[in-house]
Image 1 (tube, rainbow, N blue to C red):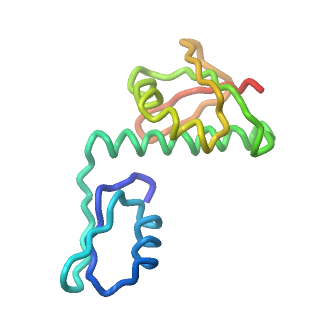
Image 2 (image 1 turned 60 degrees about the vertical axis):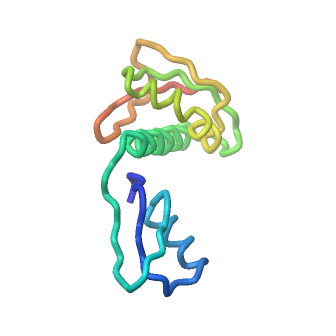
Length: 131
């Protein structure tokens, strides 16, 4: 699941190692242990979860662009981003989460379309990479 969800409730018959794997693969913030064998997934999307999903989509888009540019995975880059106000607020909120895995050392904004278009579910943005 690409969109992070709040929680998954599962029965208490699993090891901690298995619970950790489930949490990562199902993409939930928390795994709740309940009595019995019933499994339930909290699919209510809060604004925070939606924004985290957008940030993760941006990370994928930046990584895809790095690949198109044939960049070394450890090469530090600067980004110029053309995005609407909603995406800019998500970037500002999750800046560290976005920068760390993508090796981005600086993000600046432009009102002009950039070299690479990245399509998310509800938003598009464009980026240029400066080496």
